[in-house]
Image 1 (cartoon, rainbow, N blue to C red):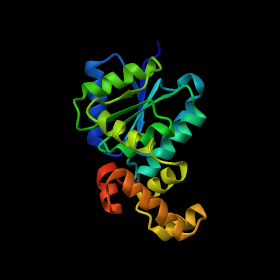
Image 2 (image 1 turned 45 degrees about the vertical axis):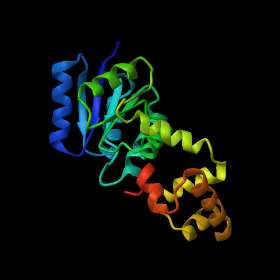
Image 3 (image 1 turned 30 degrees about the horizontal axis):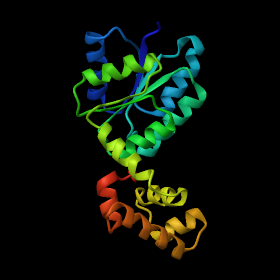
Image 4 (image 1 turned 180 degrees about the horizontal axis):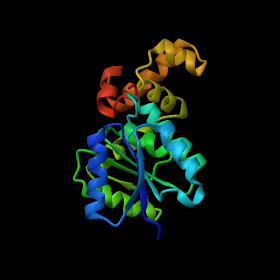
Length: 209
């Protein structure tokens, strides 16, 4: 079985730490690294199909933006479907983990956890199994349980709230009037027991970075 990995991480010490740990404690071989998505895709295109890694290990907050990390995951999944993707991130909020999984990652590990969790995620990824760090899995379960209570519109609005969008901005983005947004938010508050945007963000995690 092909057991290689590529690292996208813009902090050099963290990048070296990942490669060093896996070199010493696993049979995965590093075939490259970069600090941004652009260099990663350039490297993949130059190597061709036979040179693709079995797993991409990527930070989520790339060049100062979680959205950049989510975009990297989506584009990698589309361009190179055979490559498994494991996120290694400081973020652990349920909404962040959920967003990464929706984007197409196969595993999510917190940088605050034991490094062995990263190895576990890679081993599961190459077997085609999803892996979420046990330390942050409860956050994901709580978030997904909350979403299951909501209508599709309420889910859309909650996700925009977690991006720190105002009621006016939410209305404009969804193409609905402000009163409809306010009514949906009122139902979200009733279902969650919260009463402000700040409380929702504190509980589920901001997606605005």
